[in-house]
Image 1 (cartoon, rainbow, N blue to C red):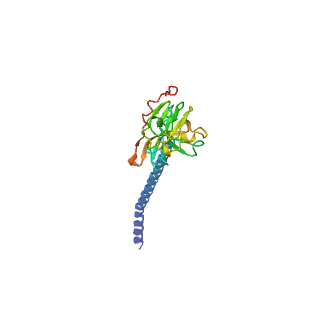
Image 2 (image 1 turned 180 degrees about the vertical axis):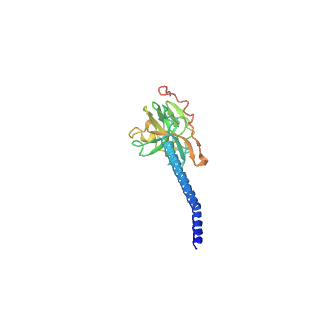
Image 3 (image 1 turned 135 degrees about the horizontal axis):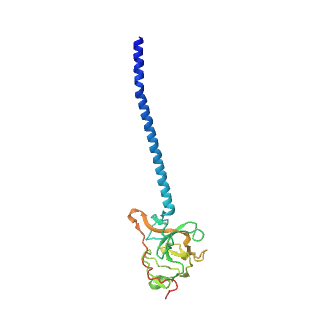
Amino acid sequence: MDTEAAQNAERDRSSHPADTEREEEGSRSAAVSGRRWRRGGVLVALCLVFLLLVSTFVLQPFLIPSGSMEPTLSTGDRVLVNKLAYRFGNEPQRGDVVVFDGSGYFGDSDYIKRVVGVGGDRVAGRGGRGGEQGRIQVNGEPVDEPYLYPGDAPSTVPFDVVVPEGTLFVLGDHRSDSSDSRDHLGSPGGGMVPVESVIGRADWIGLPLDRSGSLGRPDVFAKVPEPGGAHG
């Protein structure tokens, strides 16, 4: 009996190293999995920080809330706004589509419109519906605007303003459905948008995919003389 007990005890002792190895292997696997999870969490956090920085300083998506920029932009379009476009000494140009903060003079919201006049420009709309009298004039030069909503007049409201330095005169492409500089001429700021309130330039339509593409600056303002060289 003593010999049998000793043999059983010996078998029990011989099984312990294998059990120990399995336990150690399990511990190592758990440690490796834990490290992988931690690395994955760090990568996710870094990606989120990167996207936040890009959205804050480089590109910001913007949802088009209305039809005021049709047909260029439709309700529900998502555009990417280039927030570096006007850094490093660059300023908005005639024809640019810009997003700006309208707080205090347009309304407590962000807006998207097309720049028609820059600082020093004289911008006039004669209120007609056809011919040269119906076109917007910038520094005396009538401007053909192929981006206008079909059937819309360039402006049925007559106006004649000089854009103060450091500000912009902006209009929607769908003139009959746009509240823009024309509608705020009597408001604080005279309907002008301070350049410092511009968030960025809308450079791309991202969604929907069937409308995706770049938004270039039209060359229709190329013939417009600089302020002081106006004619007509």
